[in-house]
Image 1 (cartoon, rainbow, N blue to C red):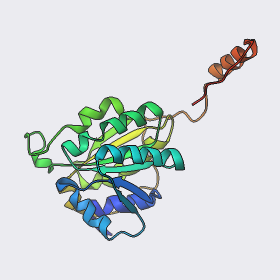
Image 2: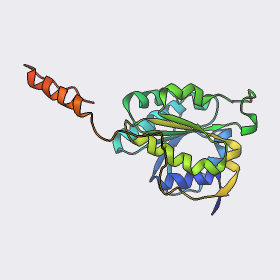
Image 3: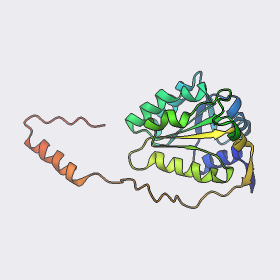
Image 4: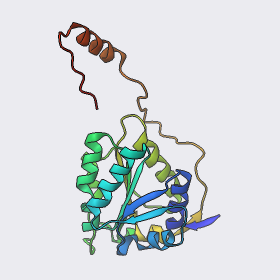
Length: 211
């Protein structure tokens, strides 16, 4: 099935069982919104500010246990997500953010509303991507959701150039995630757990502050 990059993202969201996303449309992310307009299985909630979209996605993840999803355009739209991403990173909240970006041919030329959002968010995300080939898109989205929710959960950002949203390729969702360098921890550290148990046993007035 041949789809545009924007259509591929929507199909990937459905594969990841995403029902709600939060965001604000803008020029460089408009192709994605054009596809979302006719999509009935995903509810888009229009926020009044991109920071609100990030916090709403974070709150949704906290309330449901699912990965929260937010969307913003390039430049100031993308940078407005930063506080929400930082909060999700510090509190271990699974979140995937999609940001619009200028066409790939204009990246690095100081184009209108171009900003290095991946560089800006590098310290406050588990991982981030700039999609430079539409053929990589389905794999990238799958990896982003997997990274966001496994191990210590956290935010992942996908920077999505406008020409990649419009480019077409055959769509096939990968059968499994292949990340050889990523080995998330699924169980607690036994040594630390034993130390905590011993500390509680030795305490005269034990208090557990968890979270």
